[in-house]
Length: 231
Image (cartoon, rainbow, N blue to C red; front, side):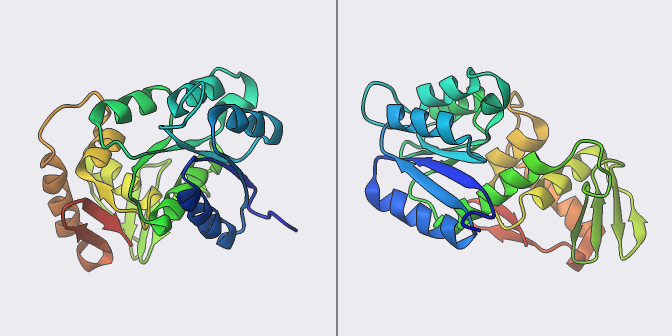
């Protein structure tokens, strides 16, 4: 079977980046289709109904990646729910916010590691593919840790561990994004919500509590200058 993992459309005008992304995604079994501008990308997305779209914000031509994302979300039906991972060379807070407000599922700033991009693709599809109400799929395991998303329970080697509400939410978000280096801002957006404007060091406080309660069973690494990565 040519594409056991499904189709991903990459809309990126930088040929080097597009080829590199395709190489890494094909290694994971995806069928990859490319477009270099908005109109071509829109045609591919509409025709192929991909599992996920990787979309550069700064596209040339009549409309950019933000507009293409808006069009996908306005398409209606299943197409409007297609996951979108946005890429940009502009490390701008407003670009990130606008992209997420338009319905992007994640956001990656250039230059980026293709391995991290592949990990983010897997994380997005893992969340999207999880059936609602399927408790067996909502129990995620990391080593000797079991995180039950439906019951909001954590077990360490089969024994329950009491976590505060935000401690559990932070752990669940980290587990759902295993292998990805997440910034404090991303963790705040994902756990506390995008409207939360407190101190980013709040994340560090909750991480310390998780490490204290879970010890070496929590394979959480500090990524200096970025944030944290689980696994």
